[in-house]
Image (cartoon, rainbow, N blue to C red; front, side):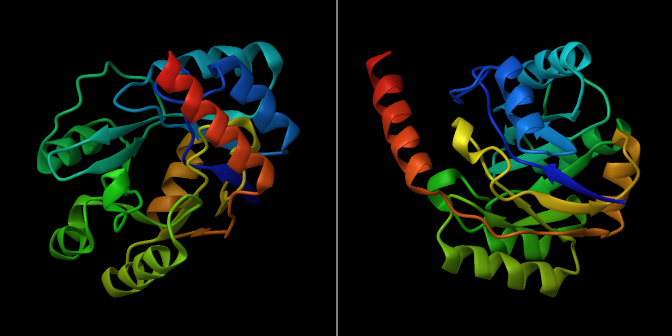
Length: 220
């Protein structure tokens, strides 16, 4: 079965506009099979979204977090919620993830504005990652193309993510994962490369939503 999986999204638990409850509703309306709630340095958004999904029914919520390491951002995606005791050293974070059965993804590696860790680090230490986010909906296409090349060079599976901070971006660029409909199956499929990225960009509505949310965050 090919599942539509959003692997990069944010809620009010970090810097997203939508609440963990709302993101579940949005994901269901967009007909996503699963969504990784990847708030910055915390599983709180994912934990609350899992509770909401139990009440509302679907989609599968993958516990995840976008961790700011000493090199830059790395996403960990797990099958269970853990405490937010993430090591900030990339090697220690990898050990942390392996011990818990989680996967690690180098997100927007060439986007320094978004704290990407850089192609050189991934190339030299590709064993620290299970996949590369080759298409980030908010990253310049040229930088995404570099990430595509990096995936081919290292042999790491290529995934995509919407990096959704506002409602209209949820599910804009999901990954297509050939897996059974459960958390373990999705993570194992990504590890084995049974995944394909999709290409999506912000539409007019998303541009205005992001602008409004940026202004509101500054006021707040």
